[in-house]
Image (cartoon, rainbow, N blue to C red; front, side, top):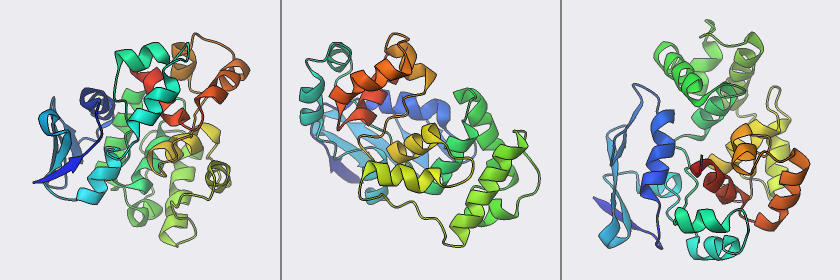
Length: 247
């Protein structure tokens, strides 16, 4: 077992609560106290300030955001009228990463304009029928039950990744990362920022058009939300997680 040390606090229940409803049936399992996939089990040892992994330490470290500078992040949010109370209520927020960046990109596309539960059902269907690799999806023909344009986007992305035309590399800036993603057909700003948050590990990614974020912020206008979020830079991805955590 490998102990991946973090700077406390760490919102272990929060990260599992986020991953659990998004877990792909037959691919990954999230219980009350652990994440399991591909023979790897991830647990938490609060007494040691460590995330415990049975293998794949580098992947687990990224996925569970072990290296977040939580002291700096919480200090930055502490006096904010919106986020200050949430930091105190949910100390140790983390941005969940992903086991596989391509899979996360597919998940983001599948999740466009539908519920988390609906997206999870579709992801399980895709995984069982086609697999979730670029090679398997580029050859897939049967639409698993989504708008055809969205299915075409998934297959197009799979082809581009399989051919090496697209890689999930973080850009020199957030704007560059988003521009690289949105140049792909069917990937708009929300999808690009969600992928940037979880797959590219962009700490300032901010899917501001998300209804849950707006609801948690008081159903303010998109313009007002973006204006308020300027004070949350360069940690808007963590602000996003706090707002979702509060729902």
